[in-house]
Amino acid sequence: MDQAPLVTANKKDRIRVVDDAEWDAHITRLGITDTYSCAAYHRASALLEPEGTRPVLLAFSSEAGEVALPLLLRPLPDGVGWDATSAYGYGGPVWQGTPDLAAFDAALHGWAQEQRVVSTFLRLNPLLHNGRFVPPTAELVDVSATVAWDLSPGRDLQQGLHSAQRASLRKAARAGITITVTSRPSDLGHFQELYAVTMQRQKASDFFFFPNTYWQALVTDDQLLAPLLVEARLAGRVISALLCFASDPSLHAHLSASDDAARAVGASAACYVTAAEWGQTHGLTCFHLGGGLGGSSTSPLYAFKQRFDPHSSPRQFQVAKLVHDLDRYRQLAGTDSTDGFFPPWRRP
Image (cartoon, rainbow, N blue to C red):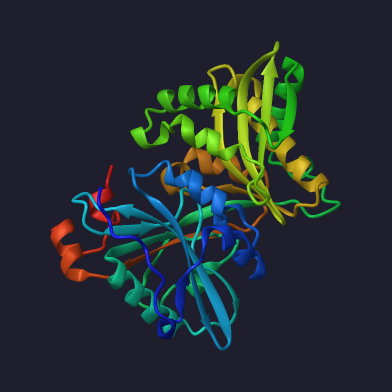
């Protein structure tokens, strides 16, 4: 696919493309070390998108503050131009100070039009509350709630569990479940296999059958990408597992997997509790469990997560939608509307 190379916008726009080698240093300088903002995670997530997808970090500065916006640029289906999206999971802007958001808005639209970026879709980070820093012309949508488990020092995590989760832990103990925790695992092959079985059982869409390259990309020596693998074994066989990311001050639940035997013996709950205890021991203060199936806060999966810390306040998950080139958007989408799945041409 023949696409023009990315270029840095001119100085008067006050927005630039950060060199890949400087990506992590830039967001760290802004006070952010979150996994979902780092370069290595975006390189991995690009492997889940159409061939030719490119990670890019945009940097904007004004007198009172700065904004950085990590994105994936995806080639459009007809090969002419791009659409931009957050990496799989949670993303959106990171910032320092009180940046001029109107100027950021104008600079982003100018850069996008120069680069033939038709639209931008942002999945915002409930822990960062970064919906406050999206461009003012964005359509900001409240999607659902997510669960954040309070891991504050000295808090008795098991005492705070819902009775259903305490019952699951007792089942796991009676069944003889053993739990192992591996920080920065060197291989995710066994987890990949169990995850594929889980997705087949749930009749998941093709997107969720991640390629081998994705799993390999998560296993690096990168400073800001720190996987944590929690596995539950029954008679020596892994029946449930949880893949997390540790990024001070939070632990993020990324993916979970289990076989048919796991639910009957409380193995999944035991993995989550063990991960939380590991996080608390290592000085992390929040375990972000995410939301329910399809983003729903009324699904059984959301209820399962909420029962680990039933008295915690839910976090608001938002998305933001921007159209930079309305004529081109209309050509691709067949409509001016941004309602529903966005952008429409990426609908599964």
